[in-house]
Image (cartoon, rainbow, N blue to C red):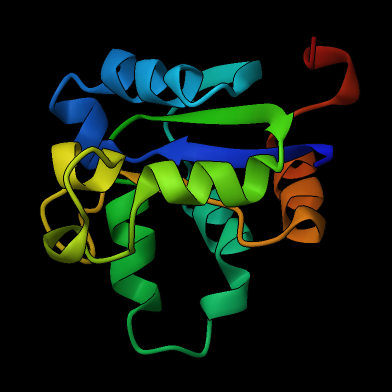
Length: 139
């Protein structure tokens, strides 16, 4: 097992539900630790830039609208096999299919309003963390 970093977002739907603390509690309960946390409201440019990989997909516009609809929390997370572990704690993308005990089962609604985002690979995590955090902001 290796110590690695991953990136997460508590999305606007979960922030609106008052779930920030619950999400963080579940992350920490999984043996992961937070290196950096920010509450912010994504601008159109930030959302388009962050989700640029999905630009050609039909849901891109809806995704950008959703992610700019309210505040979110961005997080740099560290721990043993952090990418895989956090994805297990999140549950599948569609909250309706998420097993009990996962973040998405507890706080998500459906495939769009699914409470959280998580990196899908260590390489992606590195870029996603750098998109929102300067190295000096991580402890």
